[in-house]
Length: 207
Length: 251
Image (tube, rainbow over all chains, first blue to last red; front, side, top):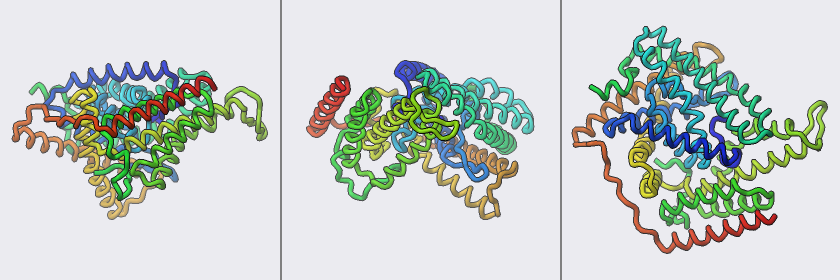
């Protein structure tokens, strides 16, 4: 459950997450120009649609978080993209919440932003095989960090949640493996079919 | 385009309210639901939200399904709290014991989460996304975020359909998901393909927008002024929430 609902977290955690998310979204918006808004938004729509497809894992299935891939493709624009996506999910589907919007944005987008920004230049230069390896590791790491952040949000909210938070981290392990594999194969595909997608957004803006 | 499963009849009281009233009302209700300390206050908030939801153009069955889905998200927490929190054991199953404090905490969470989800669904789930965006813009959300929101509403359905088509094509070629690397490789290609299609679509849209002189701004039409219904609703909701919060403080 990367989408923490309303009514679970304590006020200081909610406010902290909200402030952090507001700052990050503002920074993310500053890094793109007005003319880039359609491209960022349409790519974000693609990621949003992808996150709604269930990936089968044996008898069960998981929904991908896509933090790592979004970070690689969108860079800092991941913050406004995730903010808007989570807002829509909370309003339309009832997943996540309004008060927890900030915390959820930080939990999902921050790992992607940091890992993606670090990996994007490496992936842009690498061969498809190496790019796949880097992207796979980045995707898995982003899921692990999101799991840790969700657990921290719970543990910081109330001491009662500490043990539950630890168990919750374990529930992220299958997702981590699947997302790492899918992310790796995805970038290997993109690298062969349309490598321009992996050129950082900023450099395109400079042209 | 509608996300929300709406009833055929759109003539529901809530549908006539201004989007701003609905957004602010939902925020107020969620905040009140989260702030309730007493069990009676939490139950009252669930009742208030459920009553409000019955005035929205939502199908009861769909609403129930969504609530179940939200509960699914929290199963880990709800199962573990009674097992891990210290307190008097109410039920013992061998080495496992459910504590009274843990059960109470889990129950409180269930009530708060459901009250918040019901309130959000009641006021916002049937709000047309374009009106939601416009309402958020008038309430001060940066125009760029509103633009992204409007694009997301428009294109996510398109890419969902595109993805469904790709899946169907995969199945037609004999793909059955199994627990193996090939399955995830296929899903990786699927993800990559959808991203490539998004990028190509983004380029096309960008080009055609520039052709029409897009300079980075859309005109965002303002909303109509508040109507009498908005003022009555806001007044009633404020009175109700104030009364419930006062009751909760005394309980």
